[in-house]
Image (cartoon, rainbow, N blue to C red; front, side, top):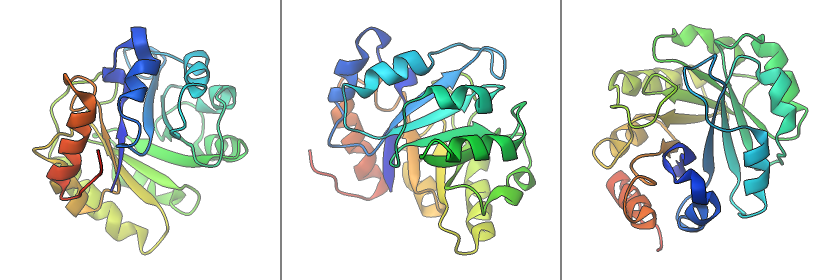
Length: 218
């Protein structure tokens, strides 16, 4: 398992400090980029993400919940350890988004809403590095976990047939369900409220590791 806390639940007035609180006990930073069109919310874009880059060594897991990923992805400063994930439902054709993101030298992820059939992402499994299963409707943090995501993770695990593609899960993950999604096949767990909305994000991250059945140093 790898853990990626979502900055959506962090204090936006002190992002650099928030990140420092979890360095060493998480594997990525998950950046939820929203455009107010693909989802009914606005967060931040490449200016904020690129500025934050100077304040941490953690790789970025950039989740583009936007209509035009092929246009805006190149504005993010990324490297081989970073991931940019786009939605299969976005306006830009998946082939174009994959080609554009791959050309940036980072890893490519594809995601789908809970109501989108799994068949929508299956044609692209040979061309991406990660599939993000949403366990809530994208757009807002703090939503309740949809247990149907567990079956979707299991099905996706079977569809991969040995392909080196990471299964990620995002939405409503906490100590009460993290082990369930990991045992189903999720390798990267995104958690927002369960970490950054807690009084001690570092302790909260360690509690997630413990709940998942892993030991992580403090």
